[in-house]
Image (cartoon, rainbow, N blue to C red; front, side, top):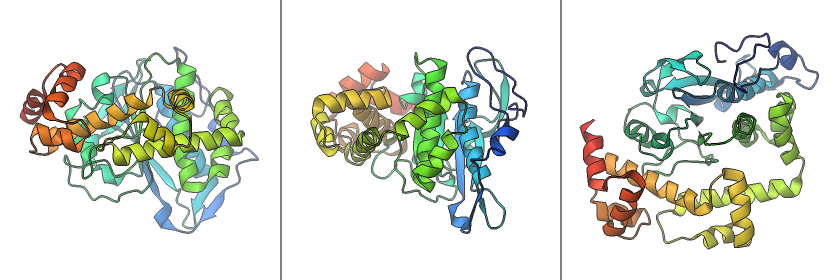
Length: 339
């Protein structure tokens, strides 16, 4: 599914949200030779969760990447390998930063396990920090009772919600912060191409990148054309997978650097360049997202949650939680459960 206002002509969206390449040109490119697949098990449902004020072009870049993949690959039945759903918490029209409304489906019409990968486009700190109770419940699988088909693929910038409640699919967070529009678009394209590469290999990812607008695709292609950089990025992503699996233990940044087989200094620099946050910030993000989900989804005492999430004890967790969210864990739980 494409965003409804992305017409075949090259209409532009204001405020640096550049125009799409003409889809007819893209799909008739000599580089895009369709490949037939025979297994329906390869079908993938991609979700893009948006909020008011989202960047329309950035959201469209993700959709375009998977539509380009559909133009390259078909099942023997003629069905495309991907389908994309635009989601929002309440469904209906959602207004972008350029005041254009797009139609969405309601989030709770699905369970998290209904998706092969999920992209969350929000610049709201309450969403990206895990303070959005409804989203935390949905990601943990406690908000809906839909059928789950867990993916084994790790998240590129994922959500850690505890050993038993973390999302079963990759979750990619796209928060712009102070990032310029062109950099945000490249980040979104890289995240979508990461999933394509995981599903169908680097060659397919590169072919799709070559058909994206130059301002979006060039950085992605340059990165893939540099084997040593690819290896470094792979190591960093492997270290984030390790952190997601072990954030409840007594682990440190030096441990994560060792997993990536890099010096701590080089690891810190490369990690910040890849994700926009430090390894420690990433680790704490995982822990706090797990804590918030467990406060909402379980009846465990705060002290036990602290120990399970690598925060030592309830007193330390309480201090850090109040500093981060402005309320105690107990008040957070009471407020969340009253909604």
